[in-house]
Image (tube, rainbow, N blue to C red; front, side, top):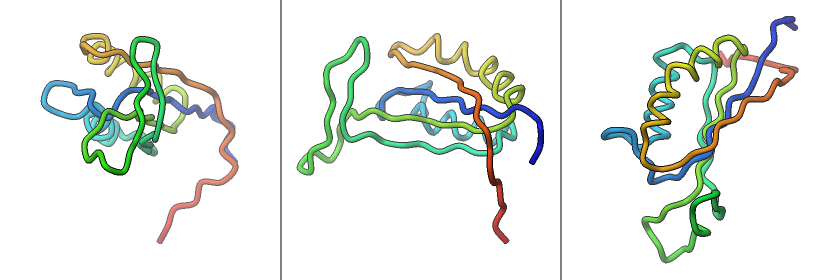
Length: 114
């Protein structure tokens, strides 16, 4: 295994949050791909709330709803720090709130498929 420090960057937002004409999570995934980030996964929550919002929950009879979303990016710490510097002005200029955190991680296995 490599001795370079890796991290996970997590962005907590909502499925309805937008940056310009894109949904925020789509914008971040596309931007991360452009910047060569190793991996990104978007998770949609079934229930949650933020510091300035009401509780949002998924119900089977609602087709469109505001739900929590977590965007996780994994790469070397220096790459994630550089990526965050590029997107932080966009996040700060959004009308809605979000939460961003970064934690160091130990990658035990990173195996590419054939």
